[in-house]
Image (cartoon, rainbow, N blue to C red; front, side):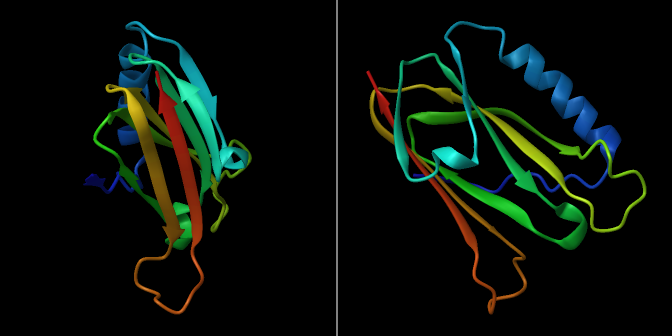
Length: 135
């Protein structure tokens, strides 16, 4: 398994650059498969070349972020944090984090995520676990 700790964008401009690269990376081959929070704990089916578009709520302004681990048959094509539209200048307003994950090998693949404030070991983290059956 490869451990990938994804960006913690705090500058909207940087996220816009990443977001534009997401649109370009998703254009080549395969099917885009949307995946959300409700898919945690399930198994989905995909084919080599497909792109999983994983979208989860995240609140970087309070220090909460996702740390993701992808199995070797999955690769990160791009990611972006998008501040909520109604956030304005509100402190503590959240947004969503989107990852484009390309399916690169057959077999059982996994995405494992932990959502927490990394500096606080006393809290109970939220987990996201997805199995991808690649044919």
